[in-house]
Length: 83
Image (tube, rainbow, N blue to C red; front, side):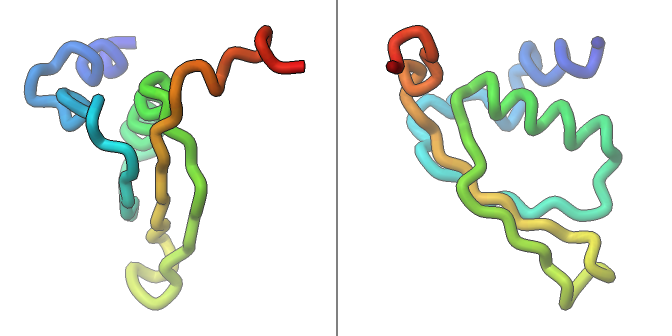
């Protein structure tokens, strides 16, 4: 939809220049579902995978989640090459 286009074409997007970032740690709390989904979908498109998730139950009434991402080579996702 329109939000996906904004994420991918917006020059002020936090995704601009992510080619060199290999690891991200993100805390998500109280965020509308549409925004979070667009964020995670874009990270997937950029070859990031979640390698750790942790619920922050001490703050934000348990609505906060920490996610750790690694950027993998595009070839990791080529299922045709794997036996």
